[in-house]
Structure formats: C-alpha cells, structure tokens
Length: 285
Ligand SMILES: Nc1ncnc2c1ncn2[C@@H]1O[C@H](COP(=O)(O)OP(=O)(O)OP(=O)(O)O)[C@@H](O)[C@H]1O
Ligand SMILES: [Mg+2]
Image (tube, rainbow, N blue to C red; front, side):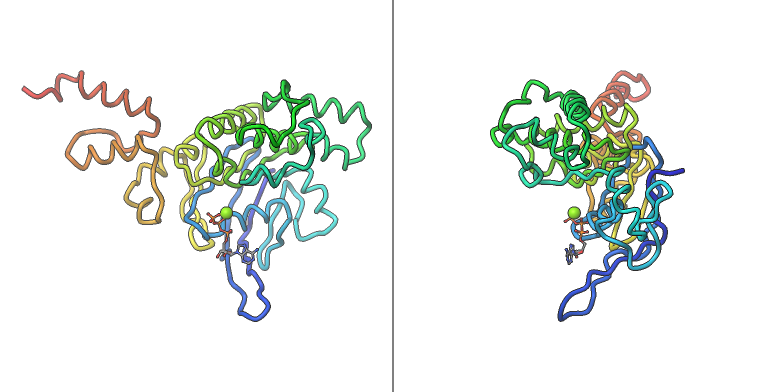
C-alpha cells in the first residue's frame, strides 16, 4: 500500500465575488512508503495546494486523495490522517508555540492526551532525532533559523507520523541552517520516514530519490534526479533551473566537450572533469 496517492485530483479555490480558480487539474501521484520525493514547479503552480490535500487541510473538488487506505474526503479519517502525515512549513516562527524548546515539542503529544511519561519519552526522542537535545531548556526565539526549523520538525516527529511533508522548509534559512535541516531530513528518510520535500533549490531536489515536476496544476515529469535534471533545456522551458554542477556540464557540452548529461553533484562533476583531463584520448596535442 502506498503512503500517499492522488487520483485525478482537481481543486478550485472559491472566491466571494469572482469565478473560482482551478488550481489542480487532474493530479496523479503515488508516493511509496519510505521514499523521498522532491516536488518542484514554478511559483503558483499548485505545489502547496497539493501538499495540503495530503493531510486533509484541503479536500479535492474532483478525484480522490488516499493516505495509506484512508480517503481524505471521509471526515472520520481526518484525525488519523493528520497523525500519519506531519507538515513543516516555510517560516519556523509561525510553527513555534512555546517559550521553552521542550514545551514546544511537547505541545502536540499533550494535545493527544498522552500520559506524561510517554510525552517525556517522545520529546526526548524527537529532540535527539533533530540533534537539539542540548537546547531543551532554551527559548526557541533565540535560536538560529536552522535550529528553529529543527525544533519545528521535532514537534511534528513527536506526533509519530509516518510521513513528513515539508513545504519549502529551508526558504528562510541561511546556508548553514539549510544544511542542518537537509541533513536532518535525509537522516530521517534513511531511518524509514517517507518524505515529500517542496523546494525551489535544485541542489535539495538532487538529494531525493525521485523528482516530480508540476506545472499549472498537473504533474509534468516524474523520475530520478539524474533523469529529470539531465534534460536541462526542458527544465528551463518549464521555468526551472538545474543543479549548478549539471548546468556547468551542460554549458561545457554546448562547447563541444564530451561530458555526461546526468551529473548532479559537485563530486560527480569533479570526477567527470578529472577523467576528461587524464584521458589520453581527450588530451590535446
Ligand atoms: N488560500 C488561498 N485562497 C485562494 N487562492 C489561493 C490560496 N492559496 C493559493 N491560492 C492560489 O492558488 C494558486 C496555486 O498556489 P500554491 O500556493 O498552491 O502554489 P505553489 O506552487 O505552492 O507556489 P509557490 O512556489 O509560490 O509556493 C495560486 O494562483 C494562488 O494564488
Ligand atoms: Mg507554495
């Protein structure tokens, strides 16, 4: 059974005095358990709207959304769905509710009405998972952006979800904060968490095991980062970039240098350039 499934999902935003706006126009997407999916697409194409369908914040106007085998349209499923699918948003300040880190992380489990010793266990475990145990007594408002976002993730983890939906979780962070959050997300995925990461950073998408590209409310492309980013022209036509190493290799290929198209990371790019420089067949006389 997949973790998430969107079947021909359509969604219209309704407005008071205007015609409704169709934002999702038949999205089909299956997210397998334990996978790490990056969701890309230019501004306003419907990524956040789709994400909100996966934890039943929004219900489809047409088609259906399943979380495991639970249909989001059935109100009885809303609560179990929100327990399974945790959402992390862009601005960590909007997600922090308490003046002490550990109280913040305890907020969700407390609302579940769990016994105090279970809450304590979950808070300890969640802080450990985001490597923030040392800050348990601190005020979240005095932490760095990356640390705040890790506390927000801990708060979601304390609910014991099976899936994390992260909607541009690094957009407001500095490079170090971004790296901290990504390291955390990658490790959680390696330990079995299903991850859907919405991002405008192509280097982040390259970390996923699958990249899904949306445009105007439909899924345009779906594949491994290597296959999706290899088509630099197409990505640019869709208003998207590719990771910098991929762009560099594409620019060199345009100048007639024989490099593979599907290089993603600085390491892969460096290795290919090194090979080129040391290959006697490529050496100029
Ligand atoms: N709460 C809302 N009420 C009405 N219209 C909305 C609402 N949220 C989004 N929209 C509209 O729906 C469309 C899709 O928005 P959405 O936020 O899903 O895009 P997105 O792909 O997440 O964009 P971005 O990359 O900028 O975050 C946009 O045209 C937006 O104006
Ligand atoms: Mg969005």
